[in-house]
Length: 177
Image (cartoon, rainbow, N blue to C red; front, side, top):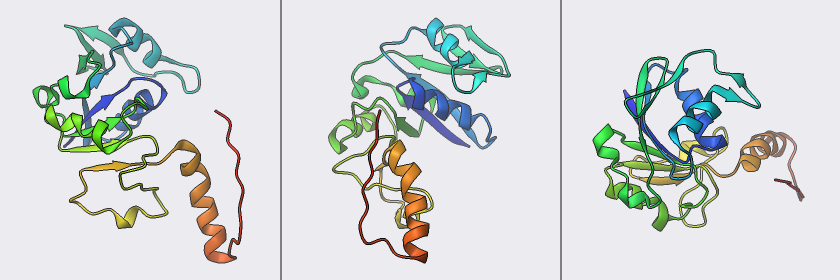
């Protein structure tokens, strides 16, 4: 069983939880967000403006977020070094705040017991991977990696196919957030 902690329960953090629920070999055991009260976490997860109402149950039980009966520990720490990931068994942490996107920032999760950290934003000083493009270059000794940006994940696989089949000499892309 892969046990995951999520730091930041905004759009990306909530989507990570939804995706994890579709895989029986993955369990989200901890969520940290110092800016979102537990009752609002429940509400935002239950009623997603893009994906609609969550089809299962989302409750608050004993100070935890319980999704379909599975209780997830909730933390409210601003500093990742203060999150006790080991207490809930999280080995992998998805850093989805957008704040700790450097090696130094993401490595703070290791102090709380995380073994690996995946940054959900571009990082200037960690290896960056895009599925379908360069994920085969990942090595198991890499403890902190970046999954690039949402724009990169959208554009790069398509650009790779075009480049591999026809070649791309120059390109220009604009993004609006």
